[in-house]
Length: 487
Image 1 (cartoon, rainbow, N blue to C red):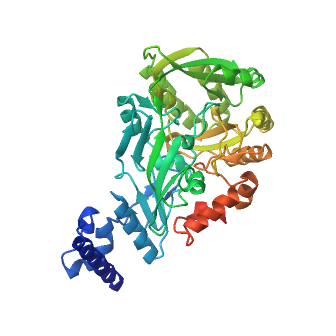
Image 2 (image 1 turned 30 degrees about the vertical axis):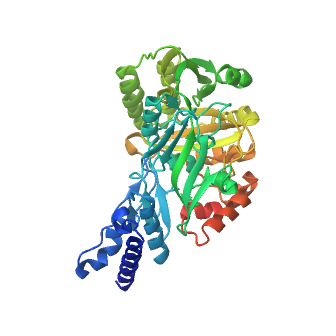
Image 3 (image 1 turned 135 degrees about the vertical axis):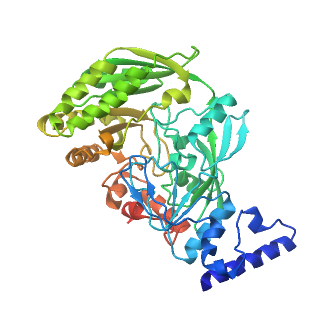
């Protein structure tokens, strides 16, 4: 209680000095609400910074969660600073969470959790330069709508748009297209509050070393406040989906990469079947053959039911993979829509997922090793699809594409009706294969790697680690996930 009284007195004195200097009240400007009587002093902490006890965080896949001591939803930078000040006084750690889509414990904490969903404004739209500046908590779904209204678009986005701008860059979200980098490569500048409360402007010209780290920050450097993104004129995409075989696609990978700007493919484990997707800009009007029966009833509800049945009879998984390829992917289909509506797709129901980046020249070797292992271990069942995508190399310190063009190889095990499916053996062998071919795990996904692994995987790992320790010497922004990464 004594500490709360001291904090209250400090805030009041600061506010008085501020008003004497002609500035508006800090307490009013930051939206803080002081208690009116001493009887409420024990609750000063939570009332000033809107901290809430009893909140339970769980990610979208419901595979990880935590119960933070206090949960905050600040509305401005001043409130973020108050939270960090309070955390420093009480020796608490702080984690910022975005849309909660990361299928790992990267955002989990038992101390202070910040969600920036109330810091979600569009700050500037520059149609001439094709740039947009946003607050860090805004969802990409909102950004997409504003850009469309202004005749602009992001050149590439991931499968999900219900994710926060700061979170998207923080974990290295990607899609596909060998002429396009991960989403962080579209960041021109950002502002970040460090553990000390200092606000840093970061870009290629301002704090460039920190910028190359902060474009994939892991939530470990500070609290991202704003982000400026490079866009392009709005465009539509034509998606052509057709069937092929795994040998054909792997033997002609260069041909496919050149044939489409945004090329990816699905491999159906326990089969030779592949579904190829070409996505390319077009002037054609929007068109779609979407069907509730095929897309929802068959592609969602029937699939989930059959996969649930397979949890009792695991030998059903290979025929389910074969059946759904034949049912939904064996033919050819086309659709045209606004770019972000083609980039986004339904991730269906809850799932375990792994996604590693490997050198692009190792694509065939890695997939064939996984296929061979599954054939030698018929008791291990793998759900479809194994999704294969591609990304251009970059110079972002902890980017899985650092200094190399890359292939992303994504494996999945669904959790029908929330039921866990055995996957540990499959996951372990997949990781072993990825490590053998020089892989790096997606930062948002669950993995077993530790600091020793990352020191081998990332040439700039030591540089990032040193910058992190300089910006956050007390480890305010660490958690269990990041301790395994850095220590």
